[in-house]
Amino acid sequence: MKKEQLLKIMEEVRPDIDFGKENRLVDDGVIDSFDIISIVGMIDSQYGIEIGVDDLMPDNFNSVEALYALITGIQHK
Image (cartoon, rainbow, N blue to C red; front, top):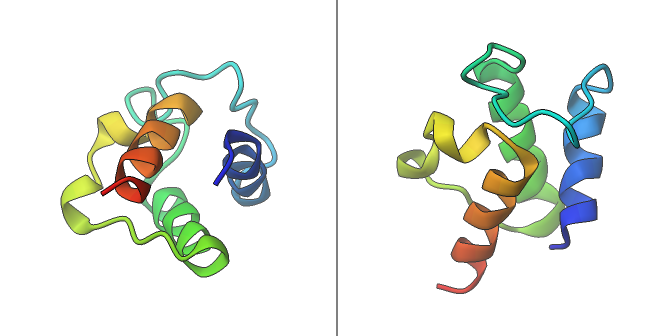
């Protein structure tokens, strides 16, 4: 998965957010748990990348970069 593909998924879930500029998405309440579940579900269904329950930590979802790093780590296991 490329970062641009991840950004597109995130923008589909929340088109009102400029994900390129935000780096405290969870900490500042910009996205909520429903948004996270929607993003995780789309990543799994479109790319077959399963994000486990243990990875559902706020730090992993605070920015596109953090989530992309998580996904890259999962892909290289």
